[in-house]
Image 1 (tube, helix red, strand yellow):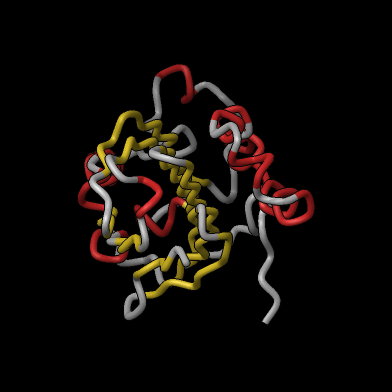
Image 2 (cartoon, one colour):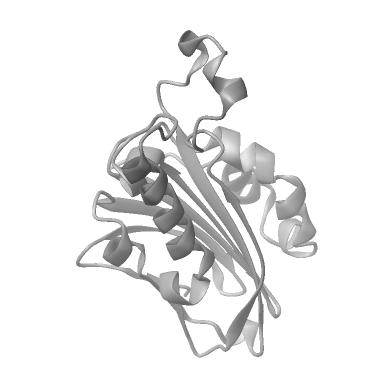
Length: 194
C-alpha cells in the first residue's frame, strides 16, 4: 500500500532529518503549509504529524470536520453549536487526547482552527451560500515541553475515544530515533517512536 505524506515530510525524507530537527520553529512557520497540503479529504480518516526535538514536542492534527462533528458546514442550530463547543473542549485538553510513555510532557501552547464550521454570524448570513466550502477541515496544533523529550518512546492517541466518526489516523512522526508512518485505528492507537 502506498501512503501519501505531506510535502513537508517528503522534504524531510529527501533532505534528511537533521536540518529540520535543528529548529523546531520551522514547523510553526510551516503550519499553514501543513494545513493546506495534507492528504486528500476522506471521511473517517484524519492525519497526525508529530515531531520530537530534544525536550520539545509538536503535534499537528488535521481532520475533515465530519469526523469530529458529524457535519461539514457552518453550525446553525443550537445542537450543532453545542457539538462545535464540545469538540473544542475535548481537543483543548491535550492530556485527554495523548498519553506519552517515558516522558512527562506539559502542554505549552495550542491553536485550534474551527473557522470553517464556526456558528453563523449576522454578517455571514448576508454572504452568498455558494461560497460555503463543500469539505470543511478542522485542525489542532499542540506544543509541549517534556522533562525527558529524547526518551519519549510511544504516544497513545486517544482521539478515537472522543470522536466516533474517526476510523483511521495516518500518523507521520520524526524523533531522535528516526522517522516513520503509523496507521492507527480503534484497535491500534499507539505510535512507536523507534
